[in-house]
Each structure stands twice: as C-alpha cells, then as structure tokens.
Length: 263
Image (cartoon, rainbow, N blue to C red; front, top):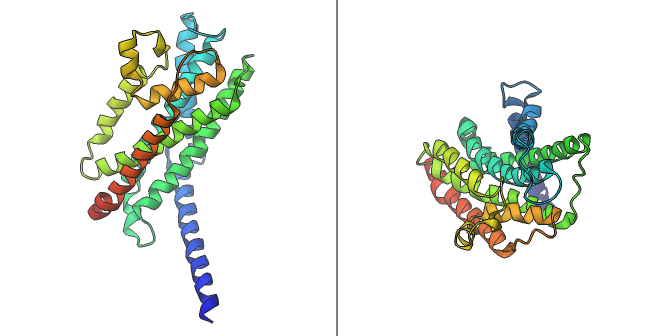
C-alpha cells in the first residue's frame, strides 16, 4: 500500500504546484495594464513600440546603418536582445513587489511568483520578437538571419541573463526597495552604452575592451553575428553564459537566505 501511496502523493503535490503556478501566470497576464483582457497584448506590444520608435527616429533622420543595407534591421537586431534582457530582469523584480500579498498564502512562495513571471516574460519576449519580424516583413525587409542558430542562441542568452540579473534584483529590493528606481537609471545607461545604436568595435581598442565586460554588449554582438557574418566582432560565449549562470546562482542564494527571511 505504501509503495503506491508515495508516487500518488508526489504526483498530487506536483499537480498542486502546477495549478498554483498556472494561476499565478493567469493572474499576471490578466491584471497588468489596468486589468483588461487586452492588457497582455499591451505587454507584448510595449517593447515592440519601443523598438520601432528607435528605428523610426534613425530611419527618419536617414542615419546610415554601420553595416548592411537596412537601417531598420540593424537597429532592431541591437534593440530587441537588449530590451528582452532588460524587460525580463526588470519585470521579475517588479513581480515580487506587485504580488507580495499572495505570498501570505501558505501555497504561494516568493520563488513561485518569480518563476511564474519568468515564464510569462519568456513567452512575451518570443511573441514580441514574432511581431517585430512580422512588421519588418510588412515593410519589405527580410528578417531571417544568415545563421539562425547563432541568432537564436543570442536571444536565449539575453533571456538567461535577464533571469539571472532579475533574481539578484529580487534579493536587493527585499532590503532596499528604492533599487527599483535605481535599476531604471542603470538600465538607461546600459542601453546607451551596450551598442544598440553603434558598433562597439569601431571605438578605440581601450574603450572597446572595457565595454566587452558588459555581457549585454556581447549579447548584442552575438545576435548581430547571426545576421551579419562579416561583422568582425569576437564574442566570448563562455563569459556570457557563465556570467548569466553565476548571476542566477547568486540570485537564488539571495532568495533562499535573504528574501525568505524577510517575508
């Protein structure tokens, strides 16, 4: 009897956890941006609008692309991975602040809230990327990368880095809530300096060497290598992945030993 009871108990616990996670994801998707059912569509389109505002400004000003024939494609390949990273890292942090009352229920833990937001942001980023590609196609621009494996790997690295930095942010705001504003300012500086609007390798070698320590810079170069094989950039793939995994490890340790102690 006990041999069959244990697997059933584990399955029941897993099903209960999945139901909690599913409920958190649905609540997240339905309550953001005013609680309307169209709110999630706004969440998806928000970074898309951000991307094409940037693209539109540079196309309108007729700023030439440093590489390739399409201004829109060049700026999109820089903005999209950077925004994916920044949105994931920021929204994971905001999830805990917005859903903290839910953690008063014994079935809901802070980690559950973080995991639910991570899954939602991954889906959101993927849908946003599809919308960007669809808009580029509508304007007669081919969004297909020359090397799809490299480009997709860069997008996945952006998501992983966003998750890692986001979990660290969760730990920081547990004892310093003002960090949510500080990270906004930090994100703006990173956005400007990461190479979204320029090619970092054209800078003096000393400056370029310093910028390479910024994993977001290397992620943008990673994605662009998938579109421009002759880009000439050297991406340290191990550094980017290890940086993201190390950040995630630190974030999980903070969640275990700091966040849980304060909730």
